[in-house]
Amino acid sequence: MKRSDIAIIEEIIQYKFNNPALLNQAFTFDTEDLDDPVSNGLLRIIGKRSISSSIVNILMEYYGVQPKNSIVRATKSTTLIYDLVDNLTSNDIYRVSINVLGLTQYIDDVKGAPVDADRKLFHAIIGAVTVDCNWDVKTINKVISFMIDVDYWLDYGFEGIDSHPVVLVFNYAVDGGLELPAYTYSKVKDEFGNEFQKCSLKLSNIKGEFVGQGDTLSEARLMAADKCYKFLQENHLISSIALDAGDFTVDTALDTLDNLTLKGYFTFAEYNTVEKENEYEVTCMIDEVDQKFTATDSNKKKAQAKAAYKMALYVTGRNPLEADN
View 1 (cartoon, rainbow, N blue to C red):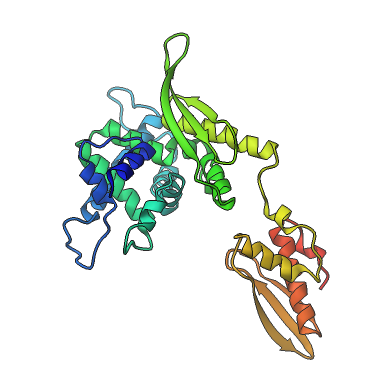
View 2 (view 1 turned 135 degrees about the horizontal axis):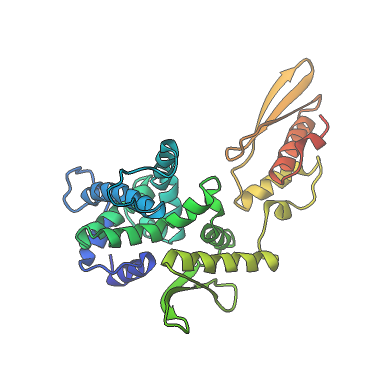
């Protein structure tokens, strides 16, 4: 890996390595030799252990320190604590983090990178940080909290993992074929001398920057991304599947689904046809959609169009029951 790439990645994860070779190793995936000493395998093992320990530390800080001479008591139910740990160490969190941080492009450049490279890379990076800082708990907590924005998930929950403002801005850029959002960080002081983190966000298609401030890097980043996304909404710059679909009828529904596919919303629709007593029963299915819609007609093409119309109504947020069978 080039020195310039290492410098960029250090800026992305907001950690400066004493030994940059560790970061380079984090991006070196296993070869056919499972005992390859230069791969990121050992770093991944260290990273997993470090993440587990760090998440527990972060949760203890979040829910408060136990009084002196008191036993440890959970302020939440034990089951919920388990759920929080599971969610904060999930592959979905790692996938989203590696993507929105713009690190996927470096995975793409690695020959032989595995299918689950995002998860493995996350573990390896944290492992590299852990070794580099000599297991300094505060440093590790800070890097993990920033990379996955722990406070956000604890405050807002995990149901809509793609609703995080940073994720929304990232998806806007990707969907529009733009350069990835550029984040820069600095420190500022108020009139009383209190120090805050500042984040400036720049999108390639919009003049100016969106600025956020907070006590932590992740909070400043969240504020900047939130301002940016609200600006996009208020100025009607966000394309939606309903807008891209436009007006459609039963006769044009097949083309509508094809056009939405070409715009990257989902894969091509599949149509399963069964002939029953001089009628055709057609079921429309799309891999990314959890619903199937069936229609019947004596004409196979019309049955297919009716099923496609129901699916088009559904994916654009309308009621498929509007469609007559």
